[in-house]
Length: 67
Image (cartoon, rainbow, N blue to C red; front, top):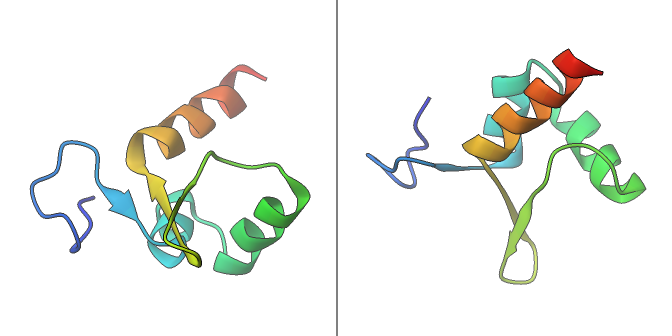
């Protein structure tokens, strides 16, 4: 899945909505996890924009498979 914001990127940055869809979760779940300090790693772009690297989502999935 490639983000429309960075076409062709080897490790695209996904919005919360895109990341939630990729993980099969609701955007609210990711927002709540951020508030609680858990869930996949994310980065802030500017003051409000939050993005998830696809590789971070894949790592989060892999951690869940092992735990």
